[in-house]
Amino acid sequence: MVKKIFTYLILPIVIIGLVYAIVQSVMQPVRFNKERAAREAVAIERLKDIRTLQVAFKSETGHFTSSIDSLKDFYNKGKIEVVMQIGSQDDSVAVENTKKLKKRNPRIKPEEMFELYRKGEQLVFSIKNEIPVRDTLFNSRPDFCVDSLAFIPFSGDSLLIESTIKKVSGVNVPLFEASMPYKSLLKGLNNQLRINLDAEREDTGRYPGLKVGSVTAPNNNAGNWE
Image 1 (cartoon, rainbow, N blue to C red):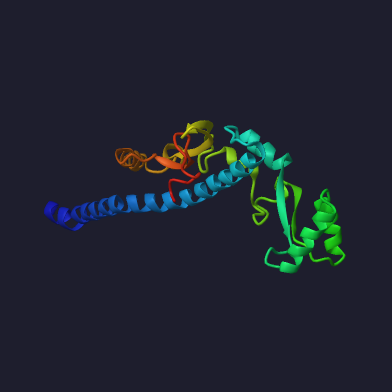
Image 2 (cartoon, one colour; image 1 turned 180 degrees about the horizontal axis):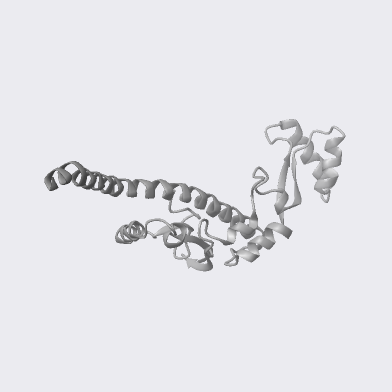
């Protein structure tokens, strides 16, 4: 009787338990990597947004910032200079007309040239306008929220951001870096798998997380996922 109970009741339960444990051990890394990819996609978009704002900020100030609040203020209240090209340098008539006009009136302003252009004169010139940052950047993103840039997605931890000016070949080069360590970005997932991932990245000399830019050497503001 005991043998029958073991054979027909206990043994199948044990087998099912072992199969379940094996499946779980195989599926855990699969689920981890799937969720990691989903979180990285969100994080990468946020880091790209920070890069876009930093580049615009530098174009106006000459340097990057290590303050998310400064970036937010720049987005909400700042302006950027936009150069609008009027006419074409390939239009020989417009080029010649412009030369003659400037020869007659060397102090003519782009605004005055624009009025002449509107009246039908063939000219080629550029005119500068100041446009609010928030009316220029991320216009195609109705869900964009500048306040979210301060935080690492899925954890609420503060994003890490630095800026510096480094002398390279005798020239002062502004640099910035924004990063999200996996410890924060992958918070709540299998911790041992996250630790293994960090160790793998560190062993190969890579940052254990996502990062854009670098404060140690110029890298054209590249992200480490690119």
